[in-house]
Amino acid sequence: MKIALAGKGGVGKTTISASLARFLGEKGERVFAIDADPNANLALSLGLSRAQSEKIVPISEMRDLIAERTGVEPGSMGAYFKLNPEVGDLPDRFKLEHRGVMFLQVGAIKEPSAGCYCPENALLKSLLMNLVLLRDETVILDMEAGFEHLTRGTAQAFDAMIIVVEPSLQSVLTASRIHALAEKIGIRNVFYVGNMVRDAEDRAFIEREFEGSTVIGYISYSDEIHSAVRQGRAPYDVSPELAADVAAIWDSVVRHVGGALGS
Ligand SMILES: Nc1ncnc2c1ncn2[C@@H]1O[C@H](COP(=O)(O)OP(=O)(O)OP(=O)(O)O)[C@@H](O)[C@H]1O
Ligand SMILES: [Mg+2]
Image (tube, rainbow, N blue to C red; front, side):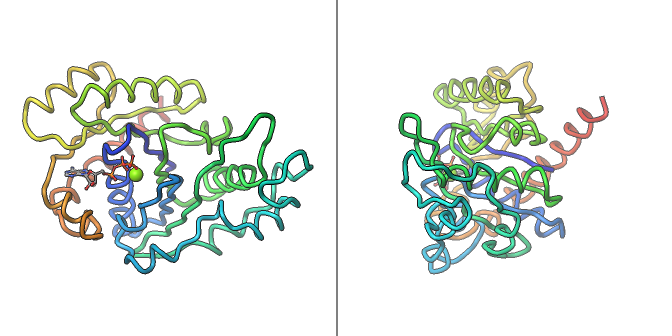
């Protein structure tokens, strides 16, 4: 199963990605949790320590590796480089294992300046493609609203995208834009998760706004989650309610994707 999470800034993508990965790790499933956000914080949410998190170098910043694999130094313009560099060894070489989860910080896609397809972008895209198309582990990808890391081929190989929404109109509008983009690049299933739900009214708002779409679950607002993140602890470890919610969300993903495959 390959799942990408997206949504407006601050809606809870990282919290939910980390918690899903931890849930799967606990079940004994082989799972990669991949941080593709330039402002990376998935490591902390998975429960890695501050010291461990601070030491991580995203793959997008490994200059020697990029030069070795693409044939060109990062930042070079106009030079020929390999568009499909060899990356098959990288997930196992750079993963950090924590509580049954294999974590990879891939880093951000660089804004390609006019006409420049940077070698670091080629490496990241190939890496994502390798993880999603060639490996059989479950992949949970925490990403930005844009899909710069995904080629069309990679996007089509995802089983689903989960768009996280909170009870706010901004998050609903961003979600609609993301949904349209996801369909355009060929993601097969788009599901919603309502996060930070405080009461029945919040839930009714999300139900109403996404009527006709597939809302696969809700997560309540909880002070435990909020303070866990402040203390650098894994939300999954401090909130049994969150752990139960992500278990239900995963069941729902599996049911819906299984149904979609069978139909
Ligand atoms: N259900 C929840 N209850 C309480 N606080 C939450 C909940 N979900 C997320 N938060 C808090 O909201 C903040 C944003 O969460 P998170 O970092 O997961 O969002 P994000 O979508 O990944 O943000 P970004 O766009 O910056 O990457 C965090 O401080 C987190 O503690
Ligand atoms: Mg995040």
